[in-house]
Length: 384
Image (cartoon, rainbow, N blue to C red):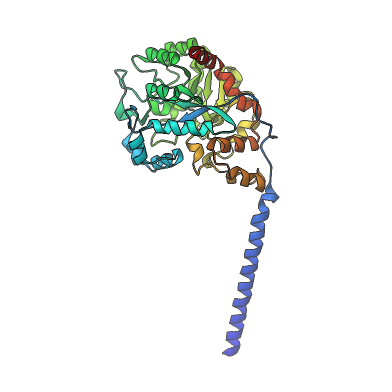
């Protein structure tokens, strides 16, 4: 009996030693796995350009506090995403109700003013869906941020620019577009899958012609949309952009059409093919460092179709959430880089520094100013 016990005890001791040894080896392996599979940045990093770095993709929102005219759907407000966005903005429901929706734009302005790298941010209005009468349909709208509200608030801040949003199916769409151009808009933003816009609709030709007249680029979401509670991703198919491209509108298809698919083909591949046909087509790199889009920034920086066609955007507030972390890129960045980037408090400095370290070239950071140059010049002349 004693011999049997001794034998059993010996086996358990050997097993324990084996397990502890295995854990030690595993720990060493985890420490060294980064070095073993380290591949470095996607491209050789360059210094930032001397000219201003403009973020063309910054969101704001609101609940109607302070007579902003903003609103979000009940589905979105009840969603876990709403609390995530509030935290990313650095506010709470109670504070928003007390200080008003304009406080979010004030927070954005303060962060951009404190950034070492970003000089200006385009704050985006967001029009809603419209009904058959060409009027705003609140029941079908997920988020609404009026142009008048954004134009008024960004005018209070030196570092902010007005990004307009007009649903072209509104009965007074052209008049609204004219108003936005007169009041300093530097681009027009669409999310077709939320706003129920078909970019290929021939009825939109007058709207596209008016965009050209005002030299307003169209920043339009392309690819899958999952930041809200519902979306019709068919409307964000890059192929639907052929009409405005053929008419000569400057199009910026957001996020290189990441994560979407139409007709059995990746939306990013569909966008890349269009690049070869239309020199007035661009894209941008906002959201491409998110956990759900790993690999897309590398694709944007290494596919020849996107060379010379990318510009800088952050997609704030998503860029200020746990979806984006330097530690997602342990095989591309050194331990020193990871620690340094994680320690950056300013969300814009952190976003720019991460993308620069991964190899986003200076030309991408500079291209936003080039694309918006006609509108920036118009804005400056109005101020003078």
